[in-house]
Amino acid sequence: MEERHMTDEIRMTGEQFSRELEYQAALYFVKQMRRRGMISGADYREWRRILIGECDPPIGRIDNPAVPSPTAGTAPASSRSAERVPEPLK
Figure 1 (cartoon, helix red, strand yellow):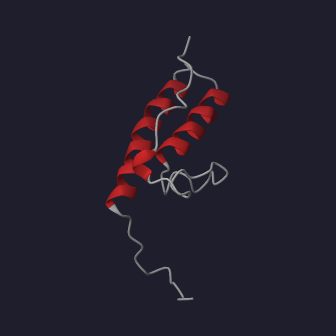
Figure 2 (spheres, helix red, strand yellow; figure 1 turned 45 degrees about the vertical axis):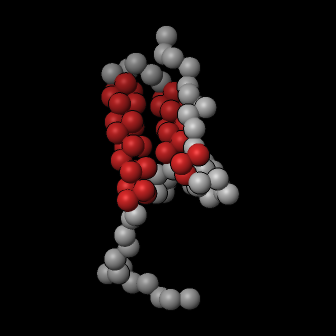
């Protein structure tokens, strides 16, 4: 196995960058709703879990590896769907 050093470059593919960007953009709005008291902490965590599962962000999932990666299986990333959309806020 090749040894890696902290100074080695690790690059993200264009597809990974797109997934990370999609996640961060959506998470921004969820964070704003949380800050304004529109959703609870539990709602925030659920939205974040769903976004990680749907977007599969390479950086965003670092502190939440328990959410299964949709790109880790046999289905290509383009087959991911938005089936698990959370209920509308009341």
